[in-house]
Image 1 (cartoon, helix red, strand yellow):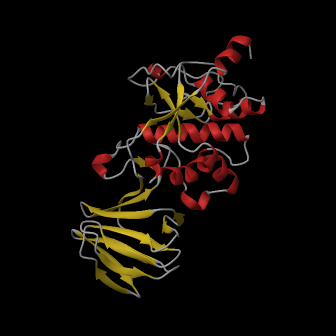
Image 2 (cartoon, rainbow, N blue to C red):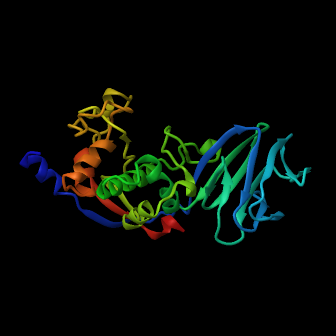
Length: 294
């Protein structure tokens, strides 16, 4: 890298506690328009009516339960018997610290299950930082350079915060796939990536005191592209730069941080903030209020 680029990489700085509006939790759409959910809890659990908060039934630990839509409600199968839960919206959660299951995976937080037009929508209601524990190792190999993983954690947190309410009409914020961010729940967590997420706690990428949706791609194939060249809107922080992933073919939209490029830069000794300041133009860093992780 030339001296000019090195200088740019060194000007990133923090603005602490700029953002105090509480998000409480983020809602992730796991299953949409499905006719069946196999679920359970790792410890003793409970199903409550999301409309009034009343307990409906208790769940035994490590037992699978089948849920299906029934007219405008939800049906559960217990010991081969079917019961109407008497609600079109329920919450499944463990009594104590534990996990809930869906899609053959374990998740932190709770599950919201809604009957919408005679199909089930399954949503993981989870704390923001706990959500990131399942994003970072899903989006980037856990054994990549540590500073690249930190950059990934900050970018993923920024994307999530900036896109809260994106799917609000459907009852959740983000999807669990590459339409938003890959998210594998607690089942994909690793000790290393959990530590890295904790070390970046609350840190986000900002411009003009607003958290930006820090778009990223697997590889830009040698050079990132301006957002306006791909999408309808030109975003000033998403400018074309050499992506430092020349030996990797383009994978994804090519906008924002190249994950392979971030790993290469980290191997050259650049830290997470320098990496992010390189891929996102004219940014600063902020730290969310602790209210965001209640």
